[in-house]
Amino acid sequence: MSVEKLIEEVILQKKISHSHDYDPILLERMLFKISKRWIAGYSNTDAIAEARKSNQNGMSAIINYLGEVNTERYQIDNSVSEYFTLLDLLKAKNVSGSISVKPTQIGLSVGYDICLENFTKISEKAKQSGHFMWIDIESSNFVEDTLSIYLEILRKNRDTGVAIQSYLRRSHSDLLHLMENSANLRIVKGAYSEEKHEAYKSNNEITQNFSKLMKLVFKESSYKGIVAIATHDSKLVNEALSLSTKGSERMKNLQFQLLKGVRDELKQQLVKKGYEVLEYIPYGEKWLQYSLRRIRERKRNIFLLARSLIES
Image 1: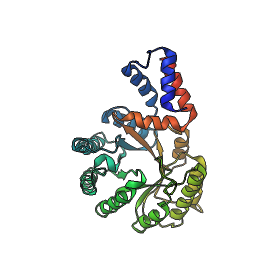
Image 2 (image 1 turned 30 degrees about the vertical axis):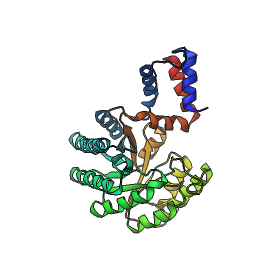
Image 3 (image 1 turned 135 degrees about the horizontal axis):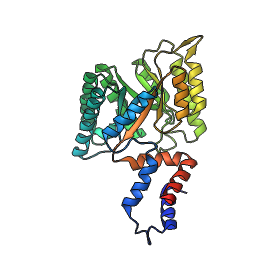
Image 4 (image 1 turned 120 degrees about the vertical axis):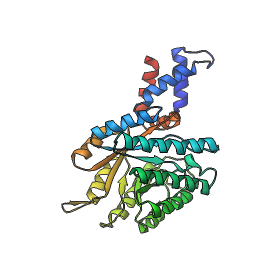
């Protein structure tokens, strides 16, 4: 059953409405209540507050202002402005954190040049304020331009990283090219809908390719770039720990990045072992689509949502 269908059925069971004429404000409040597990809230001050909690728990924060595929100039400009404000807040509040930006949020849906221009602006601002900038990766039709933009930014600012997705068949060759440039890497599984010729479909294939990508990077024991393992899969995390350890020495530039509200016990296990752990904290008014992805990932999340709706 889809999340949308579940929500509709619960609404009918509660008799909130008849003929689907329910109160959208009430529904949004109920959905937001359960979504707070994964998002900081609506505002950058909410995000900063959550980042402080991450710091208190021994982690740094990666803050993402939610939104993608912006095509209107005001949406793009507002997103750029929001990241400027966020960087100012991180510095003013003395929070250990970085930002993560989606290319289509700042213009890639419109054109390469406008996206590069905006990434350059944000990168320069991040460099001035002393914060790292991650570039999120999106669906396969944007990957080529995203990696090209990243490499242009990297030449001017080494404190910039990019994600690479193990579900894409092209990622092995992309990774080799990025490694040639000592790129800062975040390895993720990937979550977009793709054609079979573009992406692996089964979780087993995606996991196997994730393992292959890690082995490729960890084979270079003197690799200079950051290697961030961004997964909640315990087997892959344990494999990363093993691959990154040579005798009694650990890879110095290794990070583990995990989403807010997911695998908190694993985060603390890694922190206690002395590893660098970063918590990915999204926020903003476009929280619903992101939250529905989190809800779909595990049946338990769907049950939590249903219970929240019924008990409200």
